Image 1: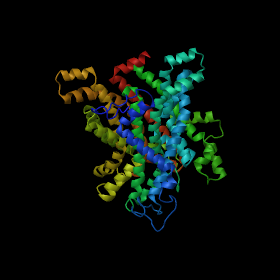
Image 2: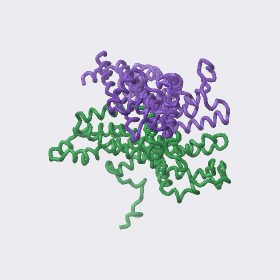
Image 3: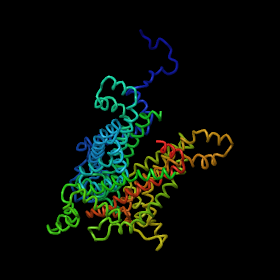
Image 4: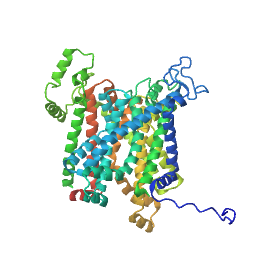
Length: 297
Length: 318
């Protein structure tokens, strides 16, 4: 049947009805927020640059070039070179690996410790809950950066130790969040039903409550990742994080301070890289919150 | 009210106890010998042994903690490993500088944030709102050390309008003090302004949707009176409660800001003692910051309950 052409077309063809649940609905709602979409694209680009750094970077990020010391941006070196003649663009691209690793691993540590503790605390209540709440109260009383610095100072310098320090500092936030989720979920009918069917506490927590509590955790983790990237850059800037010659945006800025008058590009690009990545992650976090938080619908 | 204050005060005791325990553990539970850490790897065996005895490391951990806590409660935070000065004296010497910086930063932040937050909520979903919220998100995302470096490059290196770094007491040279404070206070205040603006916007939106605002509008009051006298006053209550959070941000931010701009405050003291492994000083700064936040939170809670009796009633019933 040749329907097309046989009937006159009036106006635009009717679009398929929009889904109201599921992943497509999620995507549709997320895509409505243009800024969140831009954020997602930038984060995607940073991830790609980090993953394919050796193929994408124009040069070796650690190889000095004493002929091109402090060279201003040119066709040969788009972002210029640093005090050792190293190509800044290459260092920025490889530095993305450090920043992303710091974001993912520190938030991973905080989630791995914080989620189970928060779930148990909210589910079982009692003395464990009381103790954990007072402990998180105490941990949240420390200024975030001061505590991270103190832990990093005690553990020693290096990226791994910085990530552990940041992870420890973020843990109370995840304990509080997952506990709050469990408190509201544990009274729901589906939990009662699971309990009536004889499901064990472990099964109820992991198979029923956890999947239903993940939305705010997802939002929190994207925002925490942004904060972790800034924290790693800050620790590296202060000399307590990634150590030279490994490229890291924070340590690049640390060196750049001394050459601000002669080579301002040394400070411009790494800072811009941190700013854009963190801003994009915050945009993604805000976009996710808009989609996943029913109160904002 | 007295019952509520007493209850809140009692609740701070376990928190302060745990804060002290964390600070103590920070130095004492790390692998290796704390005495060796205190004096550094180059010190001889005898020096380390003498320090071990002086620090009471030959005693059980719990006993050591109690002795340390007893001294801390009496105001003895130990002595600096670098120059032997009492930690508390050094902290009190540096504190006014950080307080001045924080006050100027808070002034900068609130001066920008309050009009921006009110305007964004009043002109919801217009270009004004979108611009304000996007700028606020950028303010939260910008790394303060980069902002500091860029400001130095622009205003000190290029334009030569402001001195790049340093500090002078306001009573010695008030004009120069102000010039030296502008950049660090802006850096410290930016993220805070963004945070307050976002909070105020959402709080204003909530208040603007309530019945009493509609009543005020129906009475024929001008927009200005409705916003300033009715909406803002109520919207500020939740914003004021995050003072503890703001203080944490200010103290953390002061570490970076004071380091970049060579301001001799508590923040710079923190980073200097960390880099020189002056652990008693690190312990002192961390303990001091956390205790300050606990007390600010307590004060804000009490003030909050005085401003909004519903909070007190709910807590008292619980």
